[in-house]
Image (cartoon, rainbow, N blue to C red; front, side, top):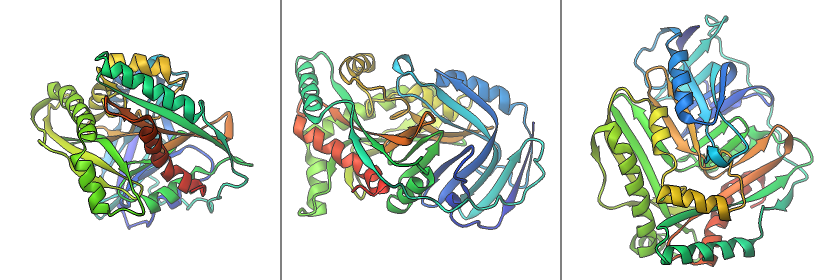
Amino acid sequence: MRATTVAVDDPGPLERFLPEAGLSSAFIRRGEGFITLGEVARFETDRAEAADVWWDEISAQIDHDSEMPGEFGTGPIAVGSFTFDPDRSEERSVLTVPELILGRRGGVSWLTRLGTNHTDCSLPPRGEPVRAPSGLEVLGGSMGEDVWTDIVAEVVSLIRRDEVHKVVLARDLRVRADQPFDLRFLLGRLIDSYPTTWAYLVDGLVGATPELLLRRQGGLVTSRVLAGTVSHDADADPLARAAELARSSKDIGEHEFAVESVAQALAPFCQAMNVPEAPSVLKLPNVMHLATDITGVAKPENSALALAAALHPSAAVCGTPTHLALDIIAELESLDRSRYAGPVGWVDTEGDGEWAIALRGGQVRPQCPDEIQLFAGAGIVADSSPDAELAETGAKFVPMLQALGLA
């Protein structure tokens, strides 16, 4: 396979080049990242580890001519989205090799093209004007709010009996439109409203996540852990709310479980690591999170995708101990999370890349293009209040409801 990468003038907002129909994807934060068009290869699987092996074989066959050697993220990449729990999902994970990548990072813009037309390095035409959804109807979720809070109370009882330490429970909402959704509209709204998050569009999955599972850039690996949340209160002082979160024993305990799980999973793949002793407070337009950025020196043989496979699922989206939390989620949640809370991102031919956790998003499936399923979750620990956890999930639905024009 042949590939060519060239520097291009700043193309402006990358999302404007996405077509309404066809194979495309996006991964954008603060205006930086990429969009892709077309596919030259596709791999559907149940396991991220299998996808890593597949990409290693594919990337070894790519003859790449680049004007920008060594620039992070330029050149051929694979873009993917993986299920939360492959053993209990009816859907499969997917990793694709795009035909065209248009990207921007650090003031540098580039275009990469693969396949038979690899020497055509002209910019693609801009996509059609985006369509706002119309005739929206909220269909509700897989379970009612009262049922969900009862499940939270049941999990709290399990935790207080020391049968498990933490469980992350999710719930969903389905929204129907009177015509197929134009996911570019939702992506654009999320990019505008939540610029500090990673906005993603991959194979029908769209959202804006604040949580970076990991970045591998050269020898450095970084993972951002978010756990412990308060919603913004219009009547409260934001600084007071941040201080309240930073002092909350419930949220600090929940956060420590998540940090420990990521640090333990990452340690075998790193030669050295730094884990901050105390979290910071990450402020977003709708919520605040306790956040810890873990850094390490990665062993060279492990790609970003291999590291993502090792880290997922962390206590931030599953619980601890992991196997017990997964069993409880499967038994009580009554919900196929599909690719919600799974890794979403990209990896290049050198093994560098970025994988976020697919949060604050929704999924449109090919068989129901006029319906989107939204997801939100909350970490349950011994001090959790069912009503407070319900309110937390409500706050986490807000980004997608805003993008739809429903909030």
